[in-house]
Image (cartoon, rainbow, N blue to C red; front, side, top):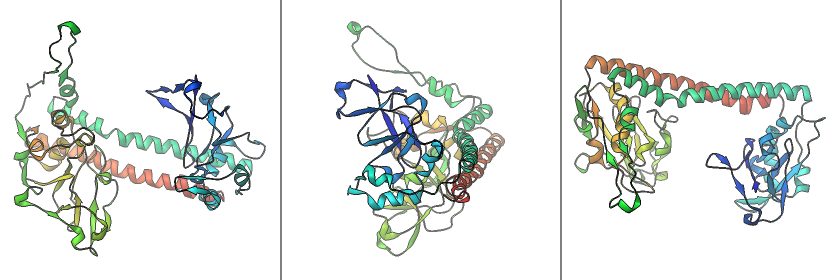
Length: 398
């Protein structure tokens, strides 16, 4: 049985191929390319196909003895000249990858260079003391970035904790009690099914989303659908599914400025004060309220677009819209398998608790504070990323 390697682009290094949370092991007879080579910890492995994209890295301890094909070159590093992990970063620098791209040959997705060509590539190499100083700063920045990303990723958990504290009935509790699978001997089985056992003993009134909406602008009678191609030179702030953060209720970045001619599909206007909610793969929990842009904001038709009615406090509504209360109600309402969607009518029939206005305001304020915290940390994360990937290298002349 053999374990194999994956080399990531952009200086991200070498990892062992995994499957199901474990190292993937494969029998020799099942390996298509018969020429395989063992690698050892500390060696440099370079992809002859993706070297132009910085696909090179140092073999880690847990990859000792893995095998690679002859599309990968394996080198022993002269550590008198270069610190191995510094070399990994160096081979992903634009000054190096641009040289490799210039001499690569082959089709678009499989452009090779020869090992002789690779060995002729030149690099700017600081002395070893500077290399070690660089790596210390690089790792410090990386640790800070990982810490910030972890804080951002914890938003959903923190939101559910606040909702549970204020409303007294957590979404986790509902989700865990939403569906239970019972076993039976095959000889006695006449029907395969799951039994719904929702906890319906809410301590407060629940209100349907349709009662929290004044207008839903994707319906034919009040449609804001439009074809940006009809105004090809006009600039729009366009929001696609990829432009909305999963689970947080924020955009990944400011809406892109796109000319109408570049948008190929029907879109929907998003006036200020309106909310969008992703009906495509709704389990991704993508939603956003336009509270900043006065005009020319449009979104993909894969979003529902609506104006809240004021029945519940806005920040509370946004908090609940992204919560597990909504998610656990929609799991059996998806239409389609490969690209599941949620119908408008099913979305409107979802329910949220309706506590007192005081509780709504308190809960909404806390969640809004969390969102603002995410915005601040995301800005810091981008700054640290820029320092780590650009300014730090420039400071050391590479």
